[in-house]
Image 1 (cartoon, protein in one colour):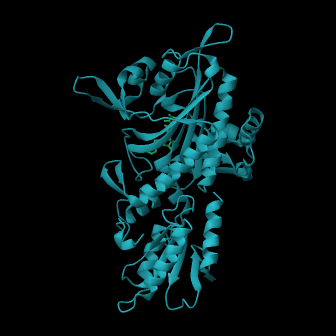
Image 2 (cartoon, rainbow, N blue to C red):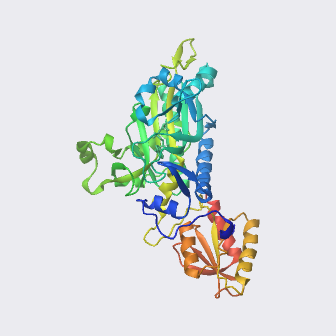
Length: 444
Ligand code: 5CA
């Protein structure tokens, strides 16, 4: 892709309205454009990153056996009246009327809709468990939308729902998501820590927020530093090992502020290990038993002929928020350098030819290199503008492809000036560059 042909509207300076670095960078390199308060259009660079995040989230849902569906954004108020949440949800819910005067709403979450889908089709315990997910736009009329796409009104969420026959089976489902989330965030090159959390308007009594540490996060957290040492590698998707995994984390005090208790914190965490800090909530899981299945009559036949309401949980990942969360974790705003993890980078590498008006040879060389990249499934952005060296580097550092090749005076023979952002420049052959990038991509 040539920079001159791409739709990447880069600004010269940081926009003054943006208070945190993810919002600054996303506006600066034209990843998003605000259309009204808390509502954004996603431009090619931002959309590309979000789609790559979505793909990883999807793969990890499929891996634990969750089936994908697609539910509408607009819902009928009827099902919300059945569950009793229509009044409770308050002003965050955007309520609308259709031309027949029917009360509709733009879905802030889908517990009711998915329960309605389930109850019309599943009648027997033999069909359980059922795990369903969708990736969809949600709308919440937040009082104070802020920080760009971090707390906005329209956002993109992966939401999953589990239906089980008993509490024990439901906790097994809960733990599958617990593991799946650790894997998902690791593939995004983030360390997300599960913290015991409040259930808020979703309800229930068991809940974890997955939080990544960031000064600009809106969640206050209290934890034991040693929780960062827990490893979730090689955990099998079976009851015992998943129970053990959750216990490994739950050994440590780790809560959000709604759950904070000073006495418990001080009793359970040695002074030198106490960490009180801020973080970004990138995922949230809930177990709420029959909170929705009971009022909505979602029951199944049990082995002995009796019926019971199914036990449910719901599991969300803020797919659009993750774009900002990764920037908060990876962007060095002092030096204005972004390095995307290769798993979600908008481009794998930037090619920076140092042209001058009378000599196109550097650009030609970039084109030849790019032809080899295309054959090897490596996506490059080529800065084919006439700008000077430092402004080209500045732009590419903001766009954040993790690798760069500079093609200039020093490029002799077949040795290329290759750089991984943050590391020293190396002079290596194209074959080696391809090998390095392919190896990095394969890790995911
Ligand atoms: N259905 C439940 C369980 S998934 C649910 O809606 N949970 S939630 O309210 O916690 O939202 C799930 C995730 O969506 C959050 O962890 C967060 O990452 C993201 N999210 C929530 N509100 C916003 C918002 N206003 N802007 C951006 N992302 C949001």
